[in-house]
Image (cartoon, rainbow, N blue to C red):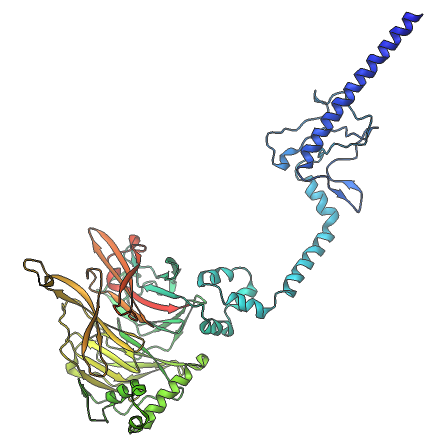
Length: 577
């Protein structure tokens, strides 16, 4: 009897020991699962319905889940695999003590999200509406404009893609005016007239000078158009004249072509195009100049038929009636005292200059005129006529023709209210925009130059410069070969004498190099073909420095896909955006 009792107690102890082992094993497994899923999202419970989003309500008597489905793939653990309740690891075990629950997700992939959206759709929509309302409440349009107006040009273009509201705010006249008046503008160089695979692609290559990054702008409106000229007015670029092939659309073919007299305007800030009034005569490669005038400016048309002009000789002149002399006196009026300034007989000229300075403070009321002279006509004949475009009236008006013996105009620029032009015969003339007639300017002997390279006139801060190519005689050393160099000359507008300002660092390989003056900087682009490759160099010169040093800002970034004809058709414009 005692032995049977002992045997029963032993079997009962063995049963309890086995039970404790099972309990410890199940607890260990449940703790591992809990730690595993607790590091993911944790248990999500729908507070409104009291339903667990991870596990169905299939619980045993001890609170353990009977389903052993493992969906750890949702938590980024691809090494884990789905296990069922009949797997060998969990077979025959269930929680019989304690209150722990295993965090096993019993939903299949994607069911949990659909289940959550179904029961929380209204709460989700309410949360989104509150978030949107808060954004509009705490970001007024005035503050938004102040933030957007300070963005760089590239960031501003990206910001316009956010929403329609931002796009509208950044294209209003008020915003564009704030952009012009602000100190956040940076120089941009725009290269037009590139040719790819023999076709005028219509692409515009823009260089952010401050960042040194190139950007490409599609301009389908310019496809097939070549040999046009461009000029910048504030933050717009005017495309004037040009040619297009009649037989092969888009190709640079001058065997059969049409010469245009239309004018297009491109606004980089809005990436928009619009047309203005066409010229009276069709022109290709006309010489352009831009000048700011007063609000009451009227062009004098009394001398349209006169083919002679007054001359201005270097040195000091006693003839006060010389209009070029008057323009020079207006330029240097700060150098004279009040008594000398009172000797000027024409008070209207001084009034015009004073109004111009007053208008500079009110940029919204600024008025500009665009002058177009020379170029080639419909029959490829050189033109000696000229026209002037008034942005206020949107009309072109013919101006006095150039003298017969002046020659073909090859370069021109506006400086201090005077439109200076240079001819292939080394003559210099100026068109007085206020008075409406030409003035012949006789300077000291012109710098010697290589006639295959046409000189280029540029203006920087009221100073007139010319770039020309001349021979350098080996620096005076015997046996050293001569070389061609491109020099920068400055004209003294008081005494009309030329002086050398600087030497360009690159060899003059491009006979049609383009140079543009902007404030105190001169930008230049040279493009040429050598050894079967097209190379390009962009340089800039700061004329405010004593030595007027040049530096490179870009090399060989755009020409790897261009044709050699781009060297002839390219044009350059500089804007501050």
